[in-house]
Image (cartoon, rainbow, N blue to C red):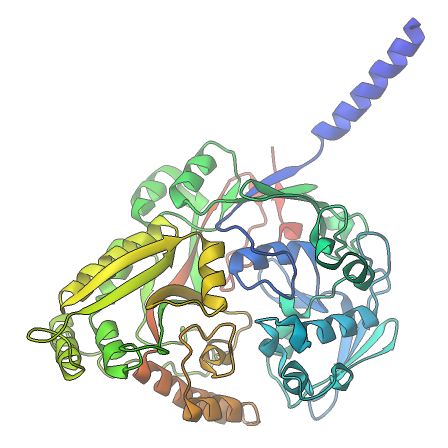
Length: 526
């Protein structure tokens, strides 16, 4: 090999090495393993984090969780609030270079609402004209109120004016999928090398229980503004292990913390611990489909026995708030409902709970109530379940704990698996009380884990959809919440605050009530 050729090869190697070293890589801890990467099938916060990176809807959330234009550059709405016309940006592209069209959105909305697809989140889209009928097989997909007028113009007609519609369009249920890839590869369209996306990032690797590598999408309309080239999502359900990896610099952020170590974290990490208000409820679902949990007296007793202040202050180290109602605070104009026994002392509640159990045939001189608590693995959930088991012991209840990883746990609940009491949570998809109350609807088979049915409740929630006056609408939702809080099919325990570890190297992280932090708005410094 000539000296000149050696020199040329050396220069070329140096060029590639320099380019590689310039690549900005963000290792991002995620508190769970995704069950799927299909935006129309995901259901957990951990999955939603990934969806925001890979896809973009007509509208999007920015780094402060404000609604901003996404694929749609502008929109118009009719005077009656029922017809929306969206104009797509001319530079919207899929990660393979294909243009994103209005028909992509029409196809995708018909896809998720197709009853054979069995998307658990489909009912979120019921504000769209005929969406419920299509999803229940009562109307053909073509009846859906979505029309691509041309390549860049999408019309969406609604059943009724929907105050939160623009924010709903930020949700993954409304994201477009690449029709050619879905139809060509079937389920394999989700694999690296085959998955075509339209967000700021594209899928490069998916190694279960290790990491998901996302690389910047060069065809994204705002690619020049995306400062991070690669984001590796690292699934870490063990909060303690995540903390250790954060301390060593192996990850630059993590979306939770081990609550029992809050004092240590505050002392050692200072402002790298971020705690902020968050619109979410931590609860236990009670399986009302089987005795004795079908008896509301049993459910009320179990709820009344919980010392929520202790759980919030001692188990969660003051990072959560006690919850006596279902809808979290923070919705303008809505008066949250609390349980009628809220003003009792804890001893009074325990006495009342014991009396309810006795009425239902349980307690001293009768049979002992036995309850199995299922929860998804994490120190925080384990400590909460252990504390609750002790509280229920005080009213004569025997408790057994069973845990599994998050993916298995929530798949079990969503698929109607058997349980007594199961840990769950709900984080707002959009800022409206309806987003919490729709969980209790009888026909919400995907997320009404208890299988609770209440015709009066259903009637109130659905009637609120047709009320134009905002105050009257919220008052109707409040009446529905009162039924839910009285019957306790879902026992609210805590209202959330977001808790995150954020490295000083990571810039652009904005605390917000939705706890949304898309990587496209972040920067990573050396």
